[in-house]
Length: 314
Ligand SMILES: NC(=O)NCCC[C@H](N)C(=O)O
Image (tube, rainbow, N blue to C red; front, side):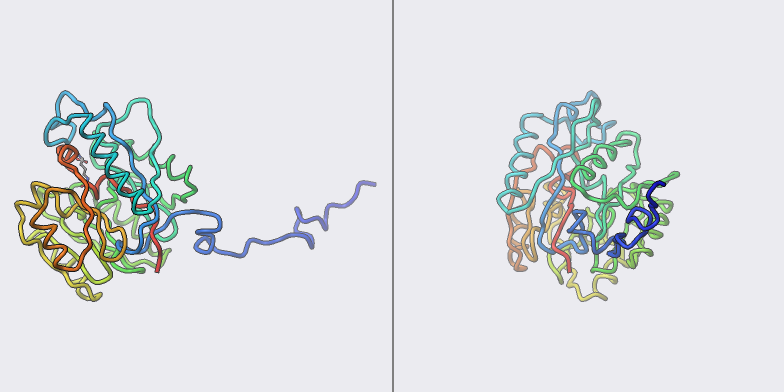
């Protein structure tokens, strides 16, 4: 007679070992990645070095502000990556694809992290459609869970979501992120116990990242008259000091706000913003600068080029 399998572990016998940890507890032991702030110590980022795809026949149609020089753009990107490495940050790379789109180096737009995994972007323009696929591959290769990919006509770019504290985030509704995406992200965040406040952004702006950055637990940098009122209120309610840029011309020209916070009160920012760099330092912020003079012709700088994958969590 065949031996009974009834008491074997495979069929729930005594040797069966049930999985009892929840997904949040498995972040670290099993899965990697996660953020719950914009300012805690940066551990890993995702980038993509620009390649020949940035050289296009019609720069405006490719959502660039001016034609780029490939060698200079690559050299600047290499310097940014070196700055992260020098700061002890692990740098992950988006894999090659057969026919790359011109803006794929702007990794911040292609996903956003939650404490328990990524929300994949669904870029709003045809020019960037599908860039998120190689990012999904990179995240999977790095053992980062993808909690949500967006469906239907949802449009979402990661630079429109900003963490306020461990349980709440702001999301900007505008050109790049629509209500369908906000509803889907909100459903996920309800499950995660995260409150999402949606704020409307002015016509003619790109991302929430472009008007609001967070440098430490209690310091936010905002663009005068461009930052949604509800965003400033939400920050102040949580104890942030919200300070407004002293010089919009310099910030506009050299993307002074397009920084990434490396650790509380320490940022990596685009070079060439002497006035605002000094102002940041007067605010007690430690500043590391990296050149993005060529890269900014593609309408982005350090913050846009950097997909934040992991920070220390609160
Ligand atoms: N987060 C950002 O500000 N990203 C910059 C993206 C620039 C790119 N040329 C675009 O239009 O999507």
